[in-house]
Amino acid sequence: MPDWFRRLYATPLRLLALGYDLYMANRGHLKSLMARPRVAQVFRALVVLTAVLWLLVFLFADERHGERLDAAFKALYRPDQPPATQIPAD
Image (cartoon, rainbow, N blue to C red; front, side, top):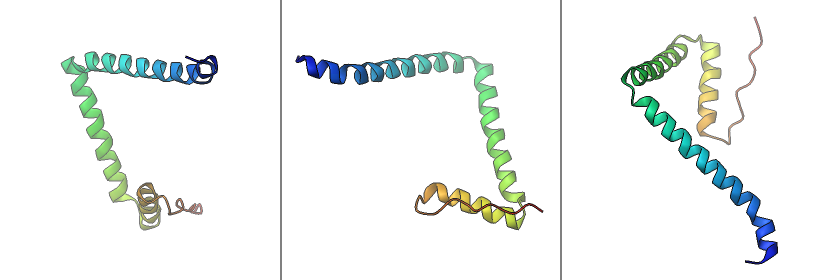
């Protein structure tokens, strides 16, 4: 392998390999953690609770804030739309 190739690409490839190793190690830790029944139940409960809280925020936001929330949510799926404008304080 030419020396220039090794100097040019060795560091980025090592960083990619390090990132992959860390990712796989963390997946293993998470898998062993989620294998414990109590931890899995608590994690599921937190995910459901978060979803319910966001649903409540969406449902009970007043019209002025609801429009801003709609615009921000739609901007996540339409990158051509500018972010929601600031609402003046009361």
